[in-house]
Length: 280
Image (cartoon, rainbow, N blue to C red):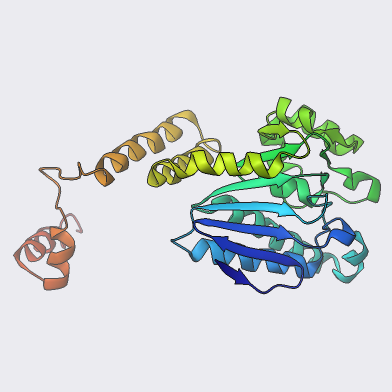
């Protein structure tokens, strides 16, 4: 087991799983600037690891996260500094979404604003029956900065994304499942049990397969059909290669790279033929 020392976040590694707990229960785990910095550091620790395969994010106490700490916003600075902070948070969500690990949000209580934006950047979301979600920024006079309009519209459609943002109501957990925002709702006392069940299933899989599937699905939803199919084809070839069927008769099988380092006959022949071809 491995721990990292943080002030507002608990970070643990158990076997192949990193457990990240937002630890400001007295503030309903609101994202202070300090906590946000610690999330960035924790995600980077996970990104660099080849041992870790899974990440679980949860909140201390009976809430997941109520979003940015509004009381601190006065410290964010002028419009340029606020722009920089929004981009900083966007990068945080992007890094979380791009991890080559399978990520799970275990949601209890409130997941609103930035808390909801975290759930939109992970792969699986399991919530308790009492969980509530929404984007109430409109009533503070601000707008979301790192997923509340962008990822949300991609997940539930523009009409419902407008409803969530323009009205600002807090929605029941089951609606998030019905709208394809979250995966599953469980009894209030079964959240940890369900997370462990999901981890057991995922741990049994071909981990390279999981990495490839996550990568191509994330890319495919952002591009046209033919480009998306290209990712599928290349993934099929990579799957075959890493499963042992990598030898192709008319491929170099590494000879080109070795030829460059050794400057051997293959390299010299190719470069002598190509260097001045059609340059007149």
